[in-house]
Image (cartoon, rainbow, N blue to C red; front, top):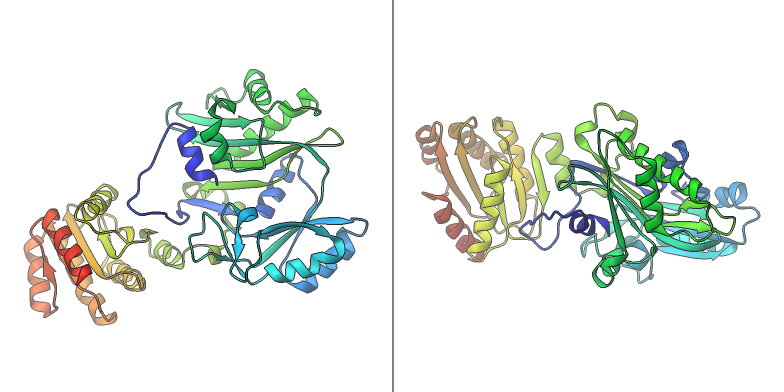
Length: 422
């Protein structure tokens, strides 16, 4: 729900060749129940809840935590938005249900171990391995709150809307005047004036204004202390007892801060991430899976983006973003090929290397070794230029491999698109 919207609201956009992409590893994503626990530690009001992973745990939670509750909120836990409007592949509609206490076990059993498809998961969906059971609170007003990083103001940007609990994308498109944006000076921090503007944007009806401002400040402090790149609460709500509560939260954290946020990064759930991206991260490769048919292996993010663009220009679609970096070893090149060939959609592979720090002979040796370890069933187009390019071309020529060579990027893309269609 949030990543595309916040990019637009914050005044920035990122265009990637491909219809959709999965969660990027540089931004750690955690489950809703983990976010609730984190907010609770920072003094932010959250509903009482417990996470379960089996029917036995469901029964125990009902006995221990929800004895006097007539209704319970049952929330499937996957790392994607749009769960409430999602559909399980079994046919069950919705990943979030409010049910009678005696129906919790049944509905949780229908969620656990099943695949939930939402707008953000792609058609393959994600497996629900955990379910979050929460107390049903009496909400009298639902609003929207988020903090993201904004290039235009060069700092955190708080986004507030007096209408929440629904698709914020649709709301922003139909009623942009309801969206309030408050940039925060990263050096000064959040002030009373800033917090007041946010609260005005939320327009609470029953909650105490000063208490709301304190909650906003605590959310900002959490955002900064925990190295968040995004924090979204939809809805942030008022209860019948006049409290402001974070009813549903989504977090992303900057992977560059992993060294000082060890406790948070220990929460990472690799089962919810693209296994290719997990493997790439272990090999210190930058990989993002896309939905095309041409696998790309490039050195440098800028060249990778240019390669994907020119593939699109020639009528093809990239299957991934894969940057081996400027100092990749033969072993990393081999791992890169293993990742590319593991994608069944890939019909051709384009290797585009401009050797500066990265040497063409190292890439060439890696390609040869990869071919020995991985059965290459698809055409491979190679364009090498730069440091040790002659040695690299000689290694490829003497290897006996059936490769398609290209003189420049345009030629390489054209050949890759042609090869993928044959």
